[in-house]
Image (cartoon, rainbow, N blue to C red):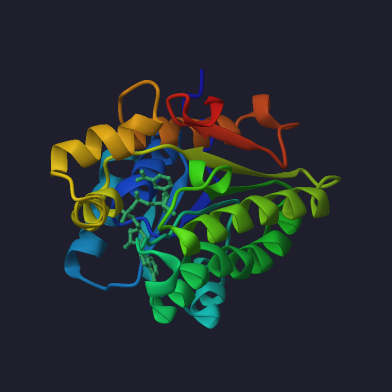
Length: 260
Ligand code: NAD
């Protein structure tokens, strides 16, 4: 149904050298889109990832280093890409602690990377999309953009914030051939989740298996992690003509979490 309909479109995916960002980039490349991968590192592996994506899917792919915690680097990422038909705001970090002990620098970093970066990239990308006559902004929010959990104050605040930014972006582009939506994943077993497990074990006094079953997947009625391929497939759908009138909304891919 979606075979290579994105040929000639340029997709910029922030935070895409691992996890959901990479999964989304792969599915967009399979649909024919040229890709800009990004993270804050600049290793040979980062550039090799872009090279193999291009070779495997017959698209062009570049890796551009930019630190999404810095406003000017967010803006420079889109300017350096030179074109941005599909913007996927995905970069994100997490920290788990009760509010009184939550480190101020972690709060600031989470708000900068998980929320502010999307404002900066969108600000530069929208004029490019208007000039090109087509565009898609896809914000990777979270089930935590719609619900809350204890010990995740900054993350929940940032994700609720990006859902709000999604709605404003959709309203400001409503009469343009541009849409903006948020994908709200439940738990997906990526490095960001792996890194939470030791903190959650400490906070809840549980084993790894107990944290996965009783803290993480307990919220997900399907009892299964969602996958990066499912996030990528949802992004491809949002880029399709079937989604031309889908804007300003959230799409949950969470095994029923937010239905509870
Ligand atoms: P991940 O840790 O694999 O990916 C995060 C990506 O962001 C990495 O590529 C990392 O290099 C990049 N990144 C981190 N700091 C950066 C910075 N300063 N500048 C540029 N890039 C930076 O985790 P993931 O699970 O793939 O997370 C991707 C997004 O999905 C995040 O926004 C996260 O909040 C969201 N999400 C994940 C889950 C889940 O269960 N995994 C659930 C809901 C939402």
